Amino acid sequence: MMHATPKQADRKIKKRYDLSPESVEFRHEQEKATLEKAVVDYYNSLSDAEVEEQTNWGQFALSEFLTPVPNPADELIGPVPEPS
Image (cartoon, rainbow, N blue to C red; front, side, top):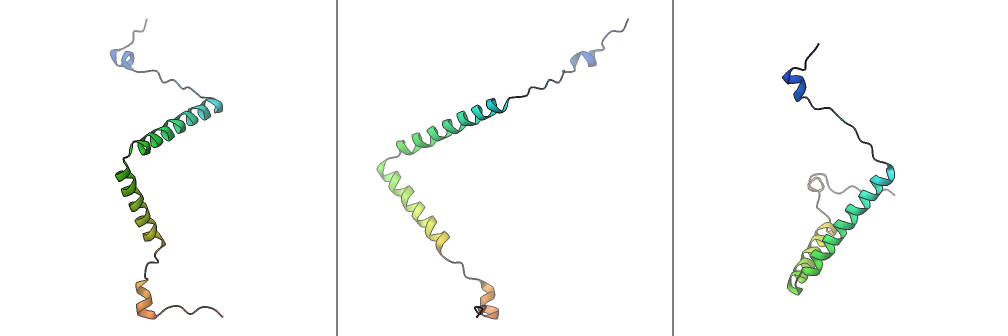
């Protein structure tokens, strides 16, 4: 008769569970709804001064993205002529 050694008795049995595509979709929708609610709650909790500050930072960030960045190579070789 074979007895389990202490090492074998401590091993965990691996189990695998599969979720249906519907269950995965339901969970994603729940997580998305929870996140959206947290965002709405955050912005609804801001004071008028905080809203103004957030707006100013947003406008600043947009202006940085929309401003062309100079290319240092243009100073060395000049701008590339437009094709005719």
